[in-house]
Length: 195
Image (cartoon, rainbow, N blue to C red; front, side, top):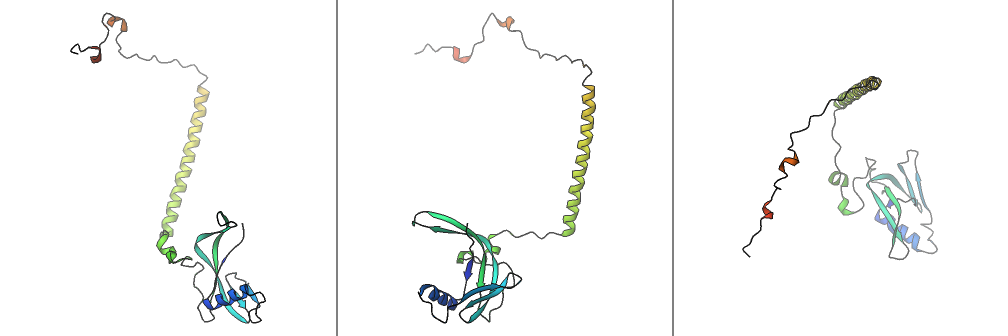
């Protein structure tokens, strides 16, 4: 699989990048194209020509798959994309969160709030209490299990002694020899001679 990312740029920068990629000999003003990040790995600078733009690395709310094709028929998955590099204009404010709120397409607008389950608000004291209770249950079950194993060993040592089996009482079933004179008949045995 390849390593890929989404590069989201303002419209003016997009025109310059398209012009740079489409021209055979690039023009002198947009000859340089560079992307560098600061030490934090989330902020950096995008350089095109002599202009510098601030950049932020943002996590997408969901993973996007990318595909390529060689024959316009069969698609081959090439990568899972989970991050986006967003180039901003000089005066635009930096995003306050590490995760981008929206997806890449209009239906995924505000995707985290609209499409995914919210994390429950849990009281840390309650979580700790439940965890302690579960721990106590697990340890008492382990103690009971070892006690049962010890009982099982005692029973195994007593297994060497011969135990007399108790007789099993038979249920009251009539003897088939007493009904031998007349066989049982069902309703289907009677014939209808009216035909």
